[in-house]
Length: 170
Image (tube, rainbow, N blue to C red; front, side):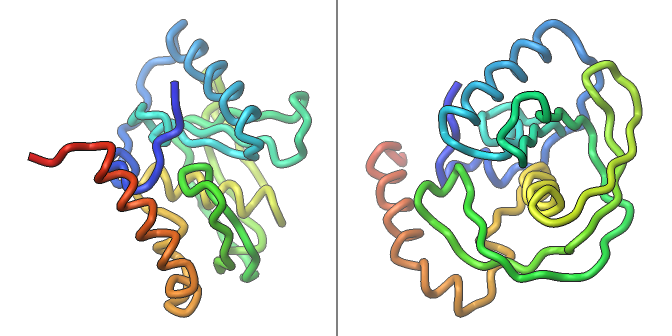
């Protein structure tokens, strides 16, 4: 399992609802957690590893006791707005300010198939919104202001050049 790097087309696909939680689900989640920690991330969406289902993991505290798996998530309320720096494992080394809601309320299912309600703020709310965007094929560069996007345009072009050189287009 590897993290897809921009502009891999899998990052732009809208993920499908996860309809069954089975042994494969648990195995993939374990691999995702290991990969996220190796990459020093706080969240990872299934589409980022080429698995196009509505599932993401978040560990905003850096503690495996706090790790969470969210299946078929939906944000039901957003409060406030804060413009803070964020990054993305699919854009290694790129950081930029992005406006996000300060607090959220959301629904999702856990690995036991139980519906859960989440209230998050600060970094956890930002991670939730970022990972949910991945499930919809939306990337954090899409949420940047034009000035911030321009500031990282050379890095984006470099990702695109590297992708083209590693993938022969016919």
